[in-house]
Length: 246
Ligand code: NAD
Image 1 (cartoon, protein in one colour):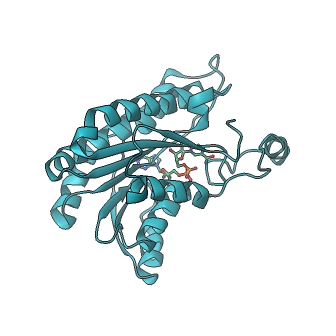
Image 2 (image 1 turned 120 degrees about the vertical axis):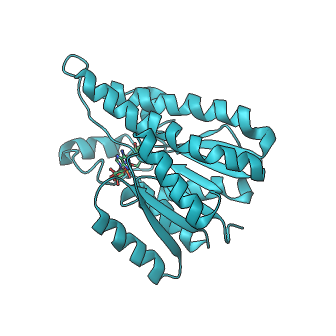
């Protein structure tokens, strides 16, 4: 189904991005993992994927820098050919109540989470149109759908991803390019590690399935959306939140 196709996953050295890269590599997809920090960690992820029989490469760039993204994708295409699947996963938080939030914090979060997705998508769409095939999955968040006090920057960026996804889905469907979003709830990754134990307990009580999600819970849905099994699905936002978003 996927064999031989090329995927780029941004922010893939840990957490959800890493789980997506591993899942795709297991299915026979060639995977280029991107991140902006920690080359050593990237090498470890690559080694693990290769030890399990997968094909993996690393491309370091900051998704919020158009110049770096353009150079990074040019190198990927030169070495591996056209990108078939793009997972716009790289993301950050910088939480604060609006009274305390600095303008730089709002901008930084939007730059990485939303502009970053635009920067990467821009690099792959032309070739996807030419080859009349491509699938893009953008990682949003249930916070982008419902809002969350203390996260107006993050929620705005993730709500932006929803509009971006739906617009591209309409724009590109006739070229056989599908674009969907996944909106995770609370997933156990570096991003949610800082939540204090007490708050975590309260949080879990509110999740109908009674646990935080695992990166693999999200990766499974991303892989499904990329696959041919989802060939009639575009412009959707699928929550993976253990029911928290009901
Ligand atoms: P994470 O912090 O574990 O991973 C994010 C990765 O993105 C890191 O490896 C980080 O180095 C990378 N990254 C950050 N800025 C970057 C940049 N400028 N360029 C390239 N890479 C960059 O977080 P995660 O939980 O795995 O989050 C992955 C995605 O899922 C994010 O978009 C996040 O907003 C979203 N999400 C996470 C949760 C959750 O509960 N963990 C919930 C909803 C949505």
